[in-house]
Amino acid sequence: MKQLSVAIDGPAGAGKSTVARQVAKQLGLTYVDTGAMYRAITWKALTNGVDLTHEDAITQMAKNTDLRLSMDVKGSDVWVDGTTVSEEIRSPEVTSNVSTIAGQSKVREVLVDKQREMGRRGGVVMDGRDIGTHVLPDAEVKIFLTASIEERARRRYQEMVRRGFKVDLEQLKKEIGLRDEKDKNREHSPLRPAEDAIHLDTTGLSINDVIGRILQYCRTNVGSGE
Ligand code: CDP
Ligand code: CDP
Image (cartoon, rainbow, N blue to C red; front, side, top):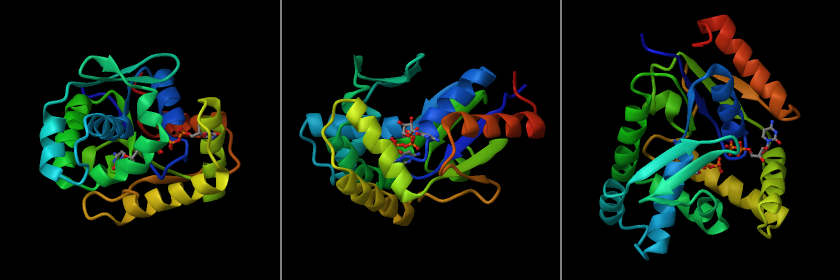
């Protein structure tokens, strides 16, 4: 029997990965961080000096990359060709370049194929921008997470400081706003809620509040998949 699939989409800093990881853990499902996949390809292109605007070169590179995700207690680990790059893919440089490759349809096709393969039998909580609309349109639970730009920037600022990066809050807010605009307005699989998604504004909500609401929704509407 196909297991439960949960799609969580939304803009940067809405809390998708934090919440998705915990929901997956509580329901005994696998967490798939699709943003990490776009980041990993961006990191590899930057590291190898590949022109990020050269769609065919990036697509070829994505096809030839051994990209693996694994989940542990701290978070998701990302492996590129056998090397772990979990920290590197969160750098400001990768963050400010990722939407360039995320706008390329051929690159998206390669990564979406991998994502669908991971979600083929269900049993996943997958987060990103186009999961409910495009990657897993038949997911039983679809959540669209949002929060005000001020709160999302504040959360990301605190996270970057914790990770040891030097960042400026106002600058971060500008960059998040810019990336959201690019993600919303791109031609291929833009960021938008699926018609059947539940909208959850997390401004002022704690992580546990958000996790609790999503778990309750999973349990009362479709059974837990446990
Ligand atoms: O963690 P944060 O929300 O800042 O970003 P992320 O989820 O790691 O995603 C990084 C970027 O990858 C996004 O800004 C999108 O440009 C792209 N992305 C996408 O296009 N489609 C997805 N399913 C996931 C991420
Ligand atoms: O994946 P996405 O970019 O949507 O957000 P995230 O990386 O899960 O969350 C960004 C930061 O906000 C993390 O440091 C979380 O701990 C924090 N967060 C929060 O403070 N309150 C929430 N309700 C959700 C996340």
